[in-house]
Image (cartoon, rainbow, N blue to C red; front, top):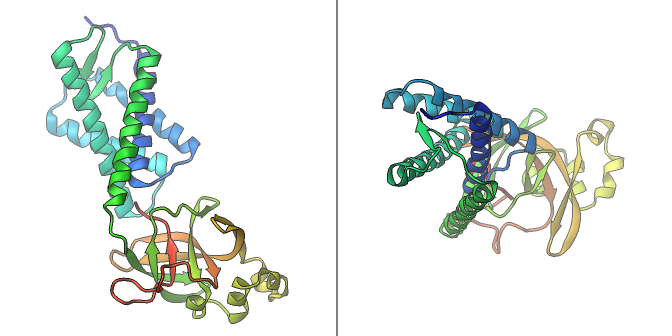
Length: 289
């Protein structure tokens, strides 16, 4: 009879879950904080205790592991809308299935001593060096695949959003730049033309996009609402005045809390229009991968 040490079982699957969450983040262009990643990995490690149960039917095991994948994703990445949650869960679940399938194949072909696979959980004795090498190889493969997928994405990819802030609304067409990772205190930042926000903000506020020294002269009610977002580009560093807002994506109704950083420059393409001839109001990083 195989002897299973619970501390080894949990620790091994904790490490494996962390690696799978990392790969999931790379493939979906999502980044989780260290604490969230750690808690998600711990949840994955504890979920490996399912190995101690009798062999479960395939249908029941599929439902349980899908639910566990969803829970781990919520812990690691938080709630970012239905579409984002479904995509992250699907990618993580597929990564976990790929790993479990690899382990089952290894077990069937070579039957390594001290290895056990049950209910999708894996237990084996392996050197730390081997485990680290395997993790690095898997993460490297995820980065390579992510790079290939990015190159195959369309060059012109825009979305229409309804922006709401301070009781006002306007419609923005934003270019989704997969290379843009600009955030502020964990919130994504959309760099938007000040002209496109004139229906959302008073003119004295949008004027600060061209000269942030005007901020102290704003009415008292607006001074505390503006934030300064640092941005580093090839031309150097600068500060964008920004306001918090909610963006509702028109095609599916997904809502994202973000900052609208104002600029007077054209940084949205050579002609400032998408393939359909619509004016591009700004640029934002992937909101749901």
